[in-house]
Image (cartoon, rainbow over all chains, first blue to last red; front, side, top):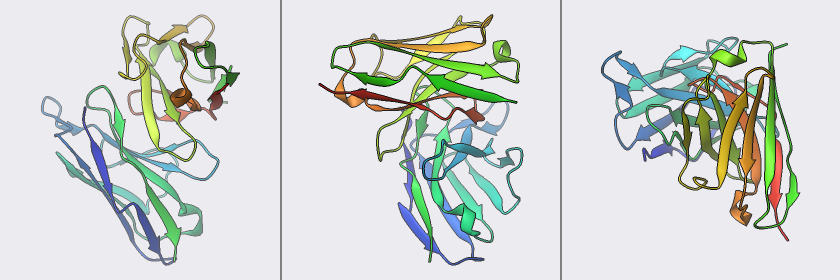
Length: 113
Length: 115
């Protein structure tokens, strides 16, 4: 199984400041035939289902504000929130859909400092 | 409205069975891979199973293989998860989700396995 490891486990950032969450996979999730990294990011607010933010490493899902961006390739990935807003308080998960069993990172809890 | 609505959760004794349903609306259900993902109370997300658009391919996490069966009825726009031999560790909110990148999720249904 591909193990997804996020860092940090929790993060406190001031409003308007940048938040960065890292995700490392135990093996590459880059599919060479189409040069795509099968890596997504989800946001889960308390009491809500997860919401897709980023797919194919860096493509924003419909309706997602452009302060959210994703980057990386192979085994190392990053989710960046350029200017933290109050509504961004949530747990964030990275997810690989390169191979079954699909797996998720353990989650990063983002709070306001 | 584009949505997924899960149902069928509840309290069941260890060793019991339950069938979850996920009703889809507002999109072309029959052309999408569908998945079940679960989340134990206070824990992270765990992928459970997937099924191809025409039902011809199914895949399971090792933890549920042989006990759970995923299926779909494209005429009814509904996804199912038959859960047999339930264990305490199966207690979780079960979500259905759409597409390879889990682009859309339902609100979830809670399954509690306890005596």
